[in-house]
Length: 280
Image (cartoon, rainbow, N blue to C red; front, top):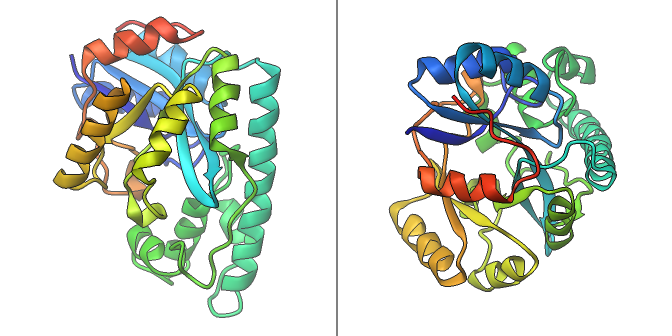
């Protein structure tokens, strides 16, 4: 069974509507795909309908923006109750903070490059969550950079003078919120230095004590040495090990199914979640 537990639709910063994302997963030979848009469950209903029609397994989730000791940590949240009031409130707060952050970054960029906030929102017509990829898409559309990768490694990088942080929930508190909503929390790409500083080894024990379920070990941003380090940490702490593509559609080079999750791990996630996995 081929299982990819991290993919984005245009409900956040992907380029495909949820239905097309599910169809693309089936065409890529996946048995199960997870929809994990940033800080929103807006794509769930469309993705679920497509999964049942097309016979593709679906894990409904989201990628939650959090902060750990001043650094950004993304938390994949699988199978939560989308109507849980605590989770819904935190997601709404983060989405609002993201809009303010994008406005600040665009204002700074506009001093040196041809870009406006309207240019950015024009790239996010279906999105409920606004983010840096929409800025990248606007920069590409305006001829400032060749592609998203160039934007993210230069003016949108975390060490860029144009970069702005945004308010987000503390990681340990986010884990508690997700667990209270019946979700299964897994740290996304924990050793992806291009997204910010690596989490130190001692951070994982504290997050595991707070209720963390797993680590996304197999990801294109991780070197072989990082995969080994994270696998060792997960084994020591009894955490699940997942793998995925972090697919965004045409905006990034990531391809569906380039990293996979063991079916036994999906069974463990399904056993903990409040929402059922749609079977293929």
